Image (cartoon, rainbow, N blue to C red; front, side, top):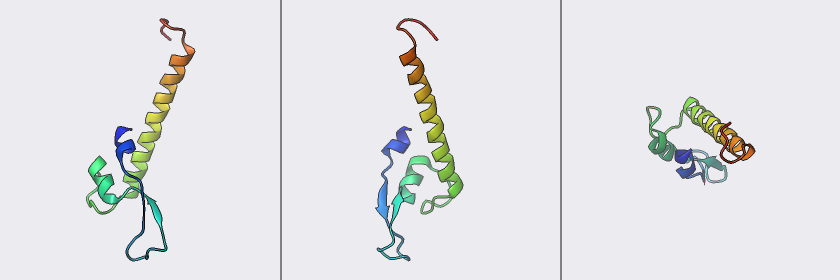
Length: 79
């Protein structure tokens, strides 16, 4: 989660599409620097983006469950 939180999310456009068509997300270079996935640092593979997103969802779910248990358990009592 720390790598996802630290990665910049920007608005950008492909040179071939022109400035009128905008996209939002990390640049491939930022994604590659954060996760080191794929073979080309100027492209984000869909399977890599999907994998990072799913790993983030799983980490958030685990953190939410742990927080929920902590809030529902009386102090000093283990669940």
